[in-house]
Image: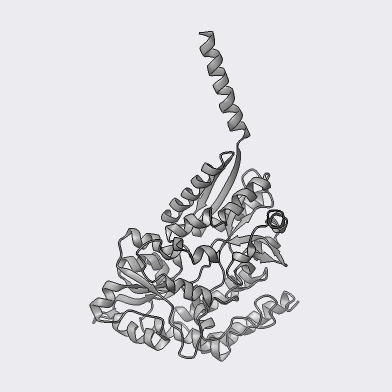
Length: 424
C-alpha cells in the first residue's frame, strides 16, 4: 500500500511540476465561427510542438473586439491583457505605446522579413520600427455565383473585364420586380472598400498617406471612381451600404442569392465551400485606362507591451508567421492569401482545394498591390471614422451626389490635417 502511495505521489509531483512550469500565452482575435475553428487548429499545432507553452484563445465578434481590447488596456491589468493580438491599423496602437517594438526580436532570431510581399510589412510599422506582422495580404477579388450567371446567360468574368463590362453584366444580373422591389442585386460590396475604385482610377484619398498635406478626394480621378460606385447603387446594381449591413453582410447576401457577386478578401472561402456553393473568383474589373490597385495591407499579429512573458509571446508570434507554422495552416484552410510570398506561391495555397478554381486571381492582384489605401499616421482612424466615412455615407445612401459632397469633405479634411499639425 505504501509503495502505491509513493508511486501516486511521484506521478502527482511530476504532473504538478509540469503544469507549474508550463507558460501561457493569451491570443486574441476576431473572426467568423469558421475562422475561429482554424485559429484553434493553429493553437493546437503550436502546443503540440511546444508543450511548454499553453495557448489560450480570446475571441470576440468584429463589432465588439476593439472596444473590449480598449477596455482591457484602460484597466491596466497586465494579467487580463492578451499577449498576442490581431490588430489593424497597427500604427494607431503603436503610437499609444501599447505594443512591443519587435525589431530586437527580429534581429536576435534573424527572422526573414524579406519574405513579405513588397510594401506589406509597412502596414505593421510605425516610426520606422516593426510592431506587427500582417497575417495575410487582405486584397479583394470578385466572387461570382456561377449558377446565377448561367441562369441569365452572362459570361463569367475574366482578367479582361473593365468597369464597362461589369456595368453591362450588372444590368442583366439585377432582378427588379414590376413593383420596384429588388429581388437580386448584381453586386454586394461594403462602402468602406471605395478606396479600391479610387486606386484603380489612379486617384487617391490624400496627397501623402504618411505625412499628408491635403485631401485629394475631390480631384477628377477620385471623383470619377466614387461616382462610378454611387451610380451602381443608384441604379440598383449594387446594394446600398446600410442595407448590406442590415442583410447580414456580403457573405450572407451572396450565400442567399441576394447578390450575384461580391468583392471581398479570401476570408470568405471556407464558409462558401462549407455551403457547397457553385462559385469562382476573378480579378476585380478596372477602368479601361486604369490600373490594378489591390490593397497591400492586412491585419497584423502584434505583441502587447504589457505581456509578462515576452519571450514566450515572441516564440508563438514568430511561429505564427512562418511557412512551417501558422502560415501553412491558414493557407491550407483556404481563408487567406498568406503574407509570406513563398507560402502564397506554393501548392499550399494554389492547390488548397478545388474551389475556387481560379486562385491565380489572388496572385495577380497581389503582384499589383499598392500601398496607400489607409493612412500610416496615428490620426488616420479618427479622420476616416469621424469625417470621411460619414460624408461618404450620404453618397452611398443616395441622399447626395459626389459633386455636392466631396469638395466640402476635402475642406473638412484639410482643416483636420492642419489642426493636427500636418504636414509634419
